[in-house]
Length: 239
Image (cartoon, rainbow, N blue to C red; front, side):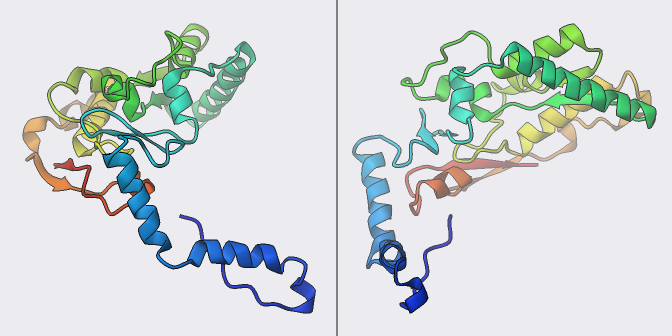
């Protein structure tokens, strides 16, 4: 959602740059631009079953959308793993943070939360397949557990356990829903209860909440598709 180019003023000081500036302005403001972009997106999705912006959004199975930018797709494909030196740098950073917090009397837990496609790989497009057995997250957790005493909480464990009971992430958004957040939060609390037994009675259960859902046609991933969405829907879980 970048800022559209503004109309340039032709002055002596800007004459050399005016053609490029005016072209940028015209490209952003020519008649029916937004309508044409929207219909291009709809045609690609409905006719070709393809994403109009594959560098940002991947169309998965059963109406699920997945984020592809900022390394998310590479993480899923496992094409660029950490080197040994990079893992050592991560270890160094974690150890420094742990010791700094220890001097302040603060308990340090390192929590790893997964991306949506990590929990629902079976709903990713069949054209996108991991090329390695382990992921960057597997690398980091394994390396830290071998070389550090930092207490690690892997949120994947609780989410994988619960994924067949309730949907944990939004179909058309990058974020987990409230139930997914609840499951992860409870998992964190249960992991630290041995150090802080006083919180044992404060850990909530599913019975403490009323779980409701409502249909939504908008998420951050449908916004990236440049269309007024009536193709993809989602049931938003609320607690």
